[in-house]
Amino acid sequence: MGEAAADERGLGVSGAGAGDDEEETSPIEEVRLTVPAGDDPTLPVWTFRMWSIGLFSCVLMGFLNQFFSYRTEPLIVTQITVQVASLPMGHFLARVLPRRAFRAPAFLGGGEWSLNPGPFNMKEHVLISIFANAGYAFGNGNAYAVMIVDIIRAFYKRSISFIAAWLLIITTQVLGYGWAGLMRKYVVEPAHMWWPSTLVQVSLFRALHEKEESPNGSRQISRSKFFLVALICSFAWYAVPGYLFPALTSISWVCWVFSKSVTAQQLGSGMKGLGLGAFTLDWSAISSFLFSPLISPFFATANIFIGFVLFLYVLIPIAYWGLDLYNAKTFPIFSSHLFMSNGTAYDITTIVNDKFQLDVDAYNQHGRINLSVFFALAYGLSFATIASTITHVGLFYGKEIYHRFRASQTEKPDVHTRLMKKYDDIPGWWFYSLMVLSITVALILCTVLKHQVQLPWWGLLFACGMAFIFTLPISIITATTNQTPGLNVITEYAIGLIMPGYPIANVCFKVYGYMSMSQAIAFLSDFKLGHYMKIPPKSMFLVQANITSEPTHKD
Image (cartoon, rainbow, N blue to C red):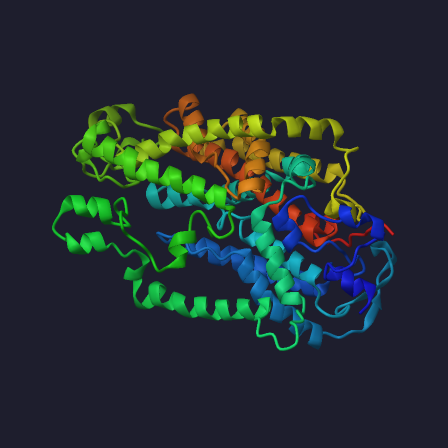
């Protein structure tokens, strides 16, 4: 077997002698067991197959995730789906496309170019999945700003022009690119920033592309066969809770036993109550909001579980039955809806005037808005989450960030960072230009079309500033725990204090503040995947931005 093939499978060491073997490891055990420590820089990555399958996957992922986002438990089509589906497509194109080589024009760099440069390889496959992630709204399932258009048209029965809606969605989706480039050296290159979710994808890529040789007489099933069996079984099973028997989504035996007890329904219902004793046989219900718990480190899952128990089974019962906090017993114990003081639904449209602002007189006449105790406490504790994010990162990673800032160019890199040095890095002005362009377009939206979005230019800059401040600490938490605290609550609270009575300005500020940070973190996550799989950085950026260009690497 050739050296290049061995390197691709992670069995060789590129450019390292035997004396460097002890350096060719990662300090993170999960990374050592999952990520190959070699590279084959001769593999083609920017191919017609990658572009065509990636573009198709991007469009399809965008449609499916937006379509399914309106479910009670959103059915999210992730990158892993594309990883599986694109493999046979790539092998098919490698068989049928012509292998004839063409001479590229001089203004495109010259050289030979072919629709089919050889077998479908792992690096092409990685780029396809990252391309598809653009349609996956970079890890969020759907384009968050679409909900603003839904609010205006479906909830308030008003209208927003196509150009305003389009600019709002596009700018919120790309605004985080700029500061993602600034954060790369802090959360992509360091070995201890290991991004647990990327290891799942790395393991799957290797299972799909590498051939395992089991010992003679061994009955041990290979990773690829195990994955295929699990895929078929899970696909077949989902038809049961998803279509044939939806009641399996939430099995609340407490409600069945005490069917006439209101308290039992509040305690036992998995959909409208605290879910005590309830369980589910529908994996989409488990992973719809926090994604798969199998990906996160155990300490992070245990931390969430303890917080869940304390909040749901200690704090909420005390507040509801013990203290009757905020007149809690007047309203459902678990609900995200808004209520009148007598427990009936609150009609928001009656307190919004023709200028799309809060009608104070109508509000005083109808009375204040009331929330369920669950909704109120969840919002309140979310502020503690954001505060603890800054504290946690400051205490546990503050020194590391400081030293990383002072010695980022001189400290000894790990094996994966050293292997990536052979490729040309992304020029900083690429990120800065995209950031300036997206902010400029957003500023035009907030000035020329301010009557439709209500958000002033200074509100946009304030939202960007909040997102930028939180990007580094939250990306560190994501890179080490696979949990991403959001700014969706703190942003709407901040603009609500500054500009009370402007509902669309509130949600626009929320989306710009929340999504730009979220997109930056997802962009960094994809860079870490490319870092592990030795994808040229320029190819990574160009695929993320959907710009076609032929990247090069250092010889």
